[in-house]
Length: 448
Image 1 (tube, rainbow, N blue to C red):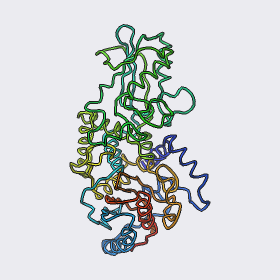
Image 2: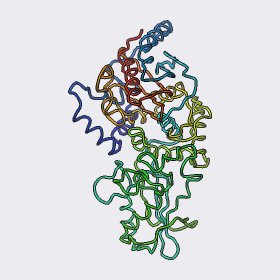
Image 3: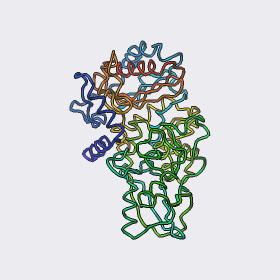
Image 4: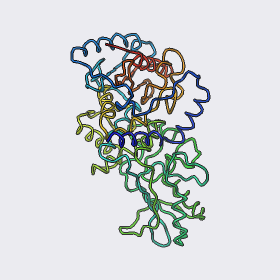
């Protein structure tokens, strides 16, 4: 069982997207030679060479007092603003070693993606994939039917933006092999319901480099072209045009439509496994992947695959494993300023990730301090450098909000889950530096 678990986690770590890989490589080129390589994900699941002694009941109060003392100064840093909520859990025992109004919900920003990832792997397997098909339409049309794969790529040469992505060109090859030359292309994104832009998002969020309309048919994370910086307000139609071009009929009309019941399937492709998609979501904090994966939870739970239905499904699934996030989650990405999740719930999700075999692939997807993803350029200066290569965490940033939630071994080898939300922060850079100092202090702590 341990071997299977390690294989799943290492596969997840290897499957991060090209965006994360490129960013990490740039950072490594400039990183100080003293930056240690990240430990393998297996170390975060209790498989390190040195066994971790189980804490005794009498040691718990001393450890909690030690953690409280160690974090008092970094949690009081001016960069975190006037209100900071935090929870630190001992992963082995589940005991709270620090709880600073940790039960009070706050805006989680992108740390909410941890909830989406945990819910998905509670109801689905890390090896599951999403299928996209092309079906026969009327009067010479073909219908591109979305299964909700946000990483389907329109790239015709080179590597797609997301590693392991299915490609439109493969659909086109299958169609050409079958002698299909369509007169028009329809895109069927009827799998998803409700608005394609959340009413809880700011008006300026779509289209941006971080936000797109959420449709069941899209390519390259909701981009009109694989190399586009700004994502699309109509990614479904953009995908239809890319398919027409791949079929050699770039001027063919493209419109939204529905595949008829029982329509012949002419071609199909499958996404990378869920474990890979989760890693890509977490590494670069990809809101579009998050919203599509949250809808996969809703589909599995037979709920409406909409913003509200997906959020409700994530809440229900997590409540079923003892991690009730409350009613404050309104999307799957944390982009909504109205989202509310407590640090205690976030830390509890991370403890579940580290202790439940079915969720272990998430560990390999977490950014590593000074090494990968959204933490590639952090933990490289000052006191935070002691956390380089050791802290694995999900970042979160909104206007006035900075958050960090992750896993770290302390100096005695004990695994800790932590979550910190500063929801009255000023400068993002100052808040991030302060959060990094807190996590690095946990890594340094031999607290009892």
